[in-house]
Length: 216
Image (cartoon, rainbow, N blue to C red):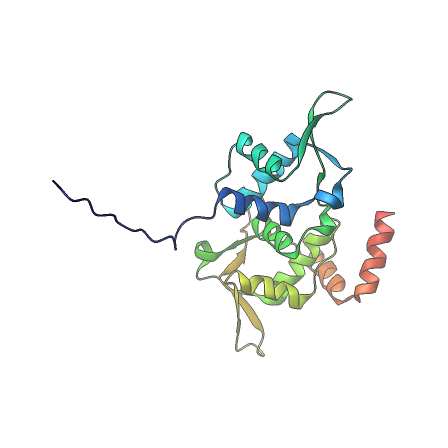
């Protein structure tokens, strides 16, 4: 009789489970549960937001059926809208842009404005230019930009590190560059950079006042 050996495999490289990835999306993109108990959001909008989020992360999205099961497992029930019969999810809503996490905002900006990582492994860009571009992008989205310190911390967390140059000790970030001209998203022109510089220099209270005036 042949003996069969049991081969043990390591779990160290096991990909994150669907549930863990789903929880990350909920944390970054949604308000749900007791904090949104009266909210109703079309199921199709939630799934579309999840797909876009996974695309930005370069992740593999689950099916819409699996997505619905994950919602149901967390007590987010389905109901038909009285107006048109569309399926809505009760007790959940997508965060307003100004309440999205810093990490989610940086990921959106990187996806729209930059090439980074392995695709830009030899590239360096002045840290000041990156922050000014982020401020202008945030303003265009109707959002408040984070502080320059928080911005740098988010870049460093993604492996985009600062290096000092011989040019008066100015800091550059690598590996990152703005998307080249001719792509869907291009670098800001000089006028927009000047606006971004003024915004970055404003006190936080003044930025908030300007944002509220614009929203009103």
